[in-house]
Image (tube, rainbow, N blue to C red):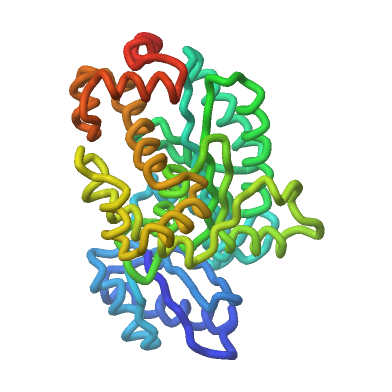
Length: 350
């Protein structure tokens, strides 16, 4: 699948249809089959799905037929395509929604991280799946217990998020969650995976948000407002994240990837690696995540410990040291204070 960005004030669907027909006329020479394409006139982008022997052959079709080569091409599996882009239909390969509108290829991706301290995790997960289906979302299975879903319409994704939040809040104090929404392109101008930047945004937001909160990017808010005659209510249920915030968030997790589980890693090291003063970093982190630097570092380690305990392989002591805690005793103390249960007791209910 590829992405084309067009620098033209007169860009239209008719232009893309004409170029696609030119591709079809010569594709057999390169062993390529054009399958489907998506057009976003407002963003001046289009995406082509094709089957071919390699990326070079696929790009050569565009080059030889009309000269508009792709900005990037990625490999996509059938399973991945069906989960994210399989909804809708097409007319002469031009993607449309089931309601007959031109499908832009953009999707709103919802991600939920649930911290379930009960024995009913599977039951709660199945209930969330049903809510996602109710709002025309497609569940994307993850290797972890995190939940992900894809939506054609941002407004559906936001209403789904509100319903999931209401349900999870109603269960008990022993179930926590973080939820994030982001809208974006199936193929970015850099990267190797479908919806790579969009998925990265929501995963980082879920990781770095306060418990029982929902975040969404500005793009999702704008798309939702375009789709509906009235806004999704209540709008104030979501924390709106802007592009400049994501730039900082990506920098933050680059630092964490290298240093988070180092026992000697402290907030002052975080300030230095971010290139900010103590007051600048504190204000930025507090505004974006709701947590002070030391609180955020500890929270990320504790959340990761939940996932490790659920896997059941390392001992509690090994998990404590692996995640940068100075001793198992201290780890148990902060774990109990945070979650109201000891690590050992949590392991027994998994």
